Length: 433
View 1 (cartoon, rainbow, N blue to C red):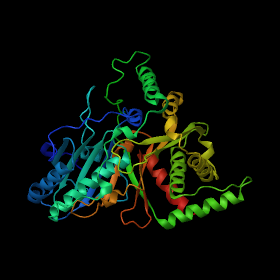
View 2: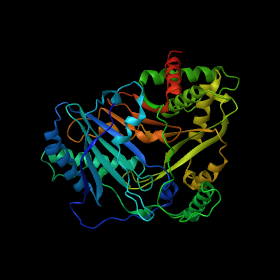
View 3: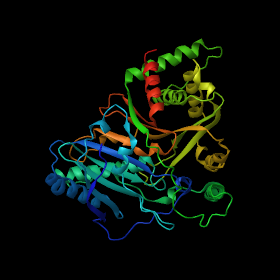
């Protein structure tokens, strides 16, 4: 695929209701995430009659106008044109991950300020268009970013239906009040101290020049042989895996009741296959982690996410015949152990990062099957495919609900080509047992 793009327009979309910018203070949730790589997502829409004139006169103006109506402060929006064939980016076969990178915008980040989110719209004439979203990890967690996208989509669709004066659904109206997030036990200072120690370690023991800089940790270069693949696990696939775990658990020497939710089953399966696909020394260290939603107000605009990590484990735990059961047992325990104190453990999570030995495989999760990303209809239909691009930045997978709402779970993987070939075989073989 030729990934070169022609830039049509770059705009600063400003709020229609107010000329004042909105500055949000950082809560301790934001401070935990503020140095991490931003979340990047591409939302593809199939629109075979989307010509360049239609793009210039309908799609982009409608997106700009509705974005302006949804904003409380300005956001960057770029419009691009590509003549590439993007059909394989929305399909079920591996493709080079580098082909996604031109479709997401960069964030404007300096020492003192950072854009919360940037958007990019790219037209593939008579094929598709896509919306690329890059969201800063501070201020915007996955649920908040999706909530804003739903507000934007709802506004855009109502404008096209000439019902722009109608109010959007109440659950889409963001709450910006940051005082709802308290600072128990001075946790903000503890998190900042941990970041200071990490930044000092990253710089080889030197004192950080500006420990409060909003600039992100530099991201590693992505190898050119990294490819992407999306697995669609059907409801029947998930039930097959669930029943397999029940059988294996009941037959084990120490049977126990597992929490076999869709998340536990799918994540445990992906985790096991990823570890086996890499191969290597059975004694190499393994860890896993996933985000934990801590919000009380569903429409709160801001980060409200903690995390849980389990490490160090060893690869041999997952590489044998009972590896899937071992993964499910561990993930099930991690979920069962979650309680109201999970947010207070953020300083401890940061403190544990330096102890990861070289060669560790730490598998994390981006996205959720509960975000409803396939409901983002801007007036031209539901998305054809939604991909989380930023899983390229580490040992991560993405999860989302299926497009048709029939119990499918989409799992996105990003691996080197030879590992991906092994992974796909493992994923398919495991579903046949």
